[in-house]
Amino acid sequence: MSNVLFLIATLCLILIPLVPKLVRLRIRIVKWLQWTWTANLLEKHFDAWVLLRRIVLFLIAAILFYIGWKAL
Image (cartoon, rainbow, N blue to C red):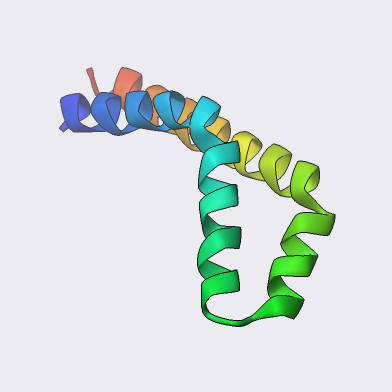
């Protein structure tokens, strides 16, 4: 069980540098769906979205590492 937690936590840490590319991909998909107001909102607050998602991924990884460490 703890190996799975460590694996997911490592995956979260690997995804942190890829967050800007994932947000840009989301903007591209939203534009493709013709949701211009959503695309404009994402573009306007791009840095905040990236920072928020990086923090969330880091917190998930930290919590999973802690739970996995206690399970050993």
